[in-house]
Image (cartoon, rainbow, N blue to C red; front, side, top):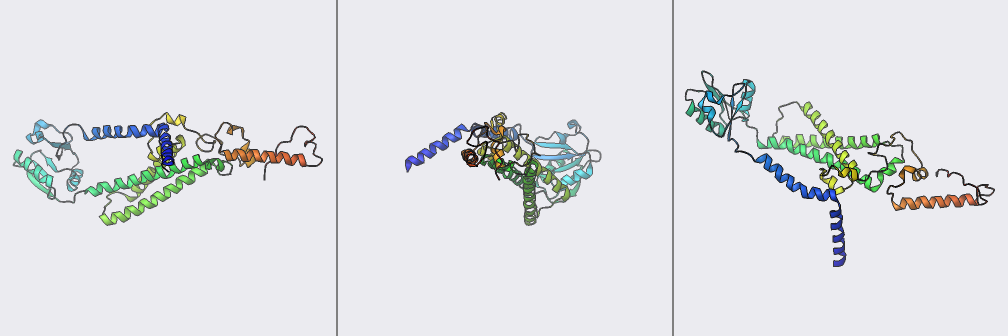
Length: 340
């Protein structure tokens, strides 16, 4: 028992090590994540407060408050949009330093309370304009991102992995001998995944949105259009990856690490991704086995044995026909008739 287990373990390790694309991705992903996270969250110290200034641009020498440390000053020329940011606590304070100086603060904002003290220390004569409004919760930012990630992974994995499995199992080669065209096959795959993911996303949007009291301030139709465009883009990316790579482990991760690996990937029998004639009529199994362009491709052994067996049976059948001038008496054999 232990020998069999070790044998399978050794074979699996060799299979993984010989898959260069998956091995490269496994080694490079942690390094790229560390570099990317360090680049995003690194750098200089981040400001603690955000203050909007009613001006097209900011000159820090015009007022001592503008030289405060750890405060980010953002120019906001439009007062209506600036007040909307204060209501949703996207900025902690809004100031207008022109005479007479005034400022707007959200009475429900903890950071606004502290920044107000800093402003009054530098400008005691500033007039206060209170503003009320609910802050954007963390779940309001998280919920759309979770829905987007769910759509992305469902579109990539649901289409790319299925097409790759069809390629490796020889299912696409069987479809090539049917009247179904590549456009019809891919169209059905795209529409099926698009309909399913939109249905699931709509159910999650309204279901979870009702539980967490999520509010959409924009257009619902525009949001639906954006979801359709994004889903189609992810489906197209999944099909592209599945057509260029032959590793199920690599396609399952959806991130091809080596651009050159696509040139080494095995191509299928001209039905998807090889530029074959999509309008070619259906052919019989006999003609399909004799197509010259299939030479050199890796065809399952069972298909080759079946083709050889059928050829032998046809030859024996012709030799037994009485009065056949092309039978056992000699002569050139007639072309094979398609099998019914």
